[in-house]
Each structure stands twice: as C-alpha cells, then as structure tokens.
Length: 309
Image (tube, rainbow, N blue to C red; front, side):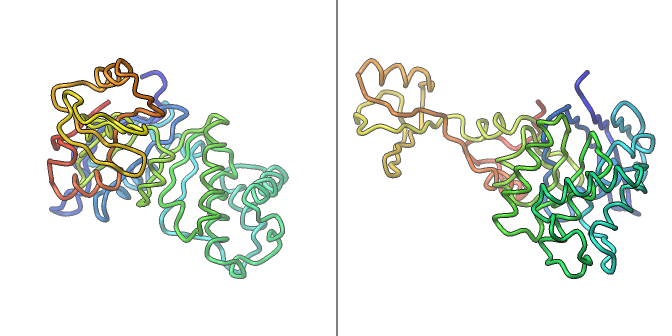
C-alpha cells in the first residue's frame, strides 16, 4: 500500500534448529500505532532486531521507509528492551551525545533534549547524573533518547517498563502527540489494556508465527459477534432472537441467536424502550491473547486462526 512505512514479507530466522521467526508477514501504515504482541519467547525481539538491521533474516523481505532497514536507520527511533544509558554522565550530556551519534549537530541536539525533558517533566534533572535518577525517571530519559534525532518511525519495546500510573499516562499522551505530529509507532508491550487504548491494528505472534493480524476493533468484534450491551432502565423478557441475558448494574448483555444487532435495536425502538446506549459487546484483548496463545478456539465463539486486515 502507498501509505505503508514498513512492509514485512515472509521473513524467517533460525537459531540452530529452532525457528524464532517463521514466515511472518505484516505491514505498518503511516500515522498509526501498531501493536506487536506475543508471550515471552514468541519471536517479538528477534523480529524487531531484524527490522532494525541488528540481525539479518535468513529469508524474506523487509522494506522500511521505502528502502532496506540498514539504509534507513537514521530515520528510525528505537527503544530496546535492554536499557543502555551512561550512568555516570549527566542526563543532558547523554542526550546530546546520543543525538550527535545520530547525526544531529550539538546545538540542535541540546535544544531538542531540553524540549523533550520538559515534555516528560524532567527539565529540572538535566544536570543530574543518570544514576541519581529513579528507575522510572531513567525510563523516561531512555524514551526521549530515541526521539532526539526526530525520527519518522518509532519502534518501542516495552516503553512502560518501570513507570508508575502517572508516568504511564504521561508517556501515553506523548505517544499520541507524536502520532498527531505525523510519526508512526510500532509498540511491543505486555500491558494489554494499554495496547487496547493506543493501537489501531495489531499482530499477535507465538512461536514465530502470526496468530492474529489486523484491525483491533474488528478482531475484538469477531470474538464477540453475537452479543450486544444495552443500557436501559428495563428490557422486556420476550425479545425475539435473544438466547442469553446477563445484567451488570444498569447494563444488559444480550446474546443473540437468529437476530442481528440492528434488528434488535429496531425492535426496541418499535416497542418504545428508552435506550441510553447500545453497542456490540467485545472481549478484552487480554482474554483474546490468553486464549489464542493457549490454543483455545472458543473465546466468544470465534475460530482460532490468522486474520489479516
């Protein structure tokens, strides 16, 4: 697609006799937050290292920002899972140094570093040595270090690691702002609730293979295709096509059989039921993740398989 900033085609990577990545294909579109998910040992880090040209794939193709990964490295910001700041150096000095390694002149690197420190509420800590900062503060410094050269694409491996809830909100806000500024983000994280909040599309892998791929909204809908959530004071007991009924506070979850959601809504309107809200029920991404990785095929009635959208 013309709006693709990253295209991966059938890549494979072997370590001895073990396949870390096996026939993986996906694309990341310009201006989205794309979730790369999977359990420990699923092949996420190997995939990311191939994208960053740290490892070479044994086979397959990767096109990143219109070229080979090794030719586009200066346009990518990478936050690795393994952190690497110079603990005895001062924060501002480290950021400027890392900026210069990425080809940014010293004055520009310093200006950007000061701006970024302010964005993560660390402007007062620029003169401190890295080792004087808490773990969460160091994580925020590591995060903005991958922004110092103003990259177009960010690849973030566990960016929320070590952050308290307040700073999780801060980094989430920064990520959304970066996308609004035109950047694209590949996010690898284990916090499924954060992935649900941030990601447009996802790829779930296990044992190096794709389990789920596509629009997060559509994937969640597939896993609960026959349920709706209705907020209303009362619902009649004789609604046609309703096979199951569960009440949670003032919300009713109806399982449909032989009737579509729009037909049910029309029925409620015809009966003059005052409906405050009506939406398709979805399954939490965490439940989908667990069920797919465990090999189950019955979450919300969906079949196990690779979905591409």
